[in-house]
Image (cartoon, rainbow, N blue to C red; front, side, top):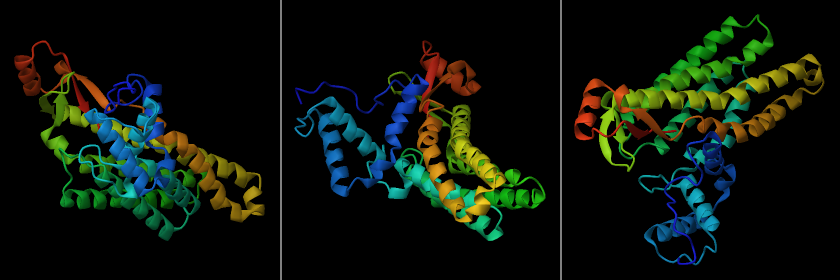
Length: 321
């Protein structure tokens, strides 16, 4: 341990006050190659992280970069608060491959009612797994809350997709190919607020600069959840808008009429390439540790903080992902 510098590995490796610092952090966290790590690889990473945290010798690591590599592998598979190993499809590293399959499926079979129902159901089932896997240890998601949000989001996505599909039947095919994006956006606006209803009702924990709890705020919860909704929608924009434009162009020049079997493979590969970048860059739009001015909080929360900490003008909270 003496040969390794002492750094706080519980904070991100890169500067989170800048967009590119956050993007670099999420590129490592969402790296789909982490899914290929074996159980022994993950256990080794966990041991390295625990040893380094406790100040013990870490002979497995020759440089601090080796420690960071183990830390990001650990973060990609273990819950940050409970330390439990996460189900593989619920991990952040599974976002790119899973969303590639879902996005390609939605846009390849957007004309079929049964396919629309299947892919919207599949997407909301995946979202429910992700939300449950990454649930907060301090604000756990109850089974009734999970089921309610799942049903509402699935109904909202299906209702939006089927209604719009019926409305755009006689319009330009490009418009029809954009319907899945609108449906996913609508589902995100329903799913996330339902999942985090406890925070909207009771408030999200507020911290000072040293991570000491100073109160809780419903307004901060609303701002944080809204920013996550925006991030999720922004993640979907590149793949679900550029792909229809590409396919529409290939359709217009006759390529897909000549090679119809290339439709699904082209959409899948293109979506995958886009999502490799869109996923971490979408996550990076807003800082994970978000700041809010004390003066902008609810009256009772603001007065309570000013009474206890008159010197404190800014507080922080974890907005979630």
